Length: 371
Ligand SMILES: Cc1ncc(COP(=O)(O)O)c(C=O)c1O
Image 1 (cartoon, protein in one colour):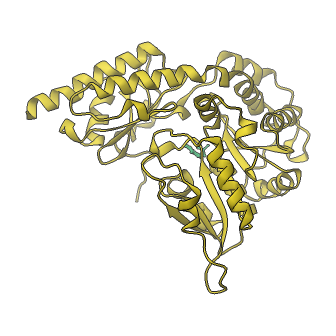
Image 2 (cartoon, rainbow, N blue to C red; image 1 turned 60 degrees about the vertical axis):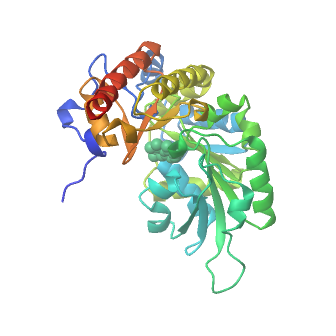
Image 3 (cartoon, helix red, strand yellow; image 1 turned 180 degrees about the vertical axis):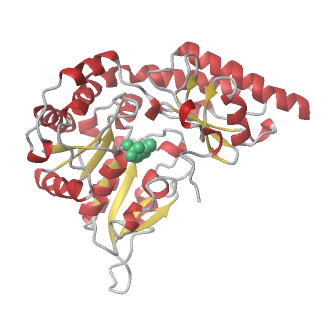
């Protein structure tokens, strides 16, 4: 049996994976390439053995991340998935339940690691069209404290919420959920893979936004543009435990300052330009809304993720993405008739306009033919 590296048209020949010049790659903000400044910093990074805690660049990055999030400590981890898993593992026992949104990354795209490795059941619930949970929705699925029921241990939130189009948790909502969860003895973990996008959308500060959560994971390798790496932050004691699980899960790296150096630039410099990605996403959504056969409410786009429906185009999402791919615009099918485009620093406004022209030519043509 063989596996594809991605769904649909994104399964590519290994010799053909890098986008050629002029390709507008909107599949995800994970495709960003490190800037020249990052590459220079990586080459010049002071390094040591991080398993011994001796890598000065990693230590600096961890200190800075903790400061920015107003937490006692932070830890560099290879990936967002590992970061989430470490946090889930720490806050739960085998047999615990984890409440999360139905379309959340921890529920759908982390290979059931919370079950396979942490031994937990996801208790997935639906947070309305925007995927943003309320305490009421969470409370409805908290298990009663009866010995023959598996017990809820953790609530996992995702901000921004990827698969519902980069929607954003208002800070008061996060605080309200934390207050209620804590009153019941539950912990709250935040998958903040794109927390800086959420901060830009809210005009808020990440420390304030995450003040009450017990742990937060965020990615350096998405909109912030670093090639590799995520961070988790929390109390000192929590991070000491996290270091142990990181090693157990195979994530103890050695002279990893070469990566942390890029991460440092991502953390310090990238947040201040994310508004450009949001403006591009907004322009993209407005353009898509004007194309016959494609459907999106531009007002629903709050950050850098644009998800639209292509039911009326006469093509399903894979067919549409295939047709676009042939024209140098790469998008991601996310459901049968749902396509995602994510803006990031390697696509400028001209790229967005090109994407719209090609979408119009591809979707418009089919609609014209079938009409
Ligand atoms: C919301 C969210 N959480 C977690 C992750 C996992 O990050 P990584 O790909 O670094 O494992 C992703 C990746 O796309 C994501 O979108």
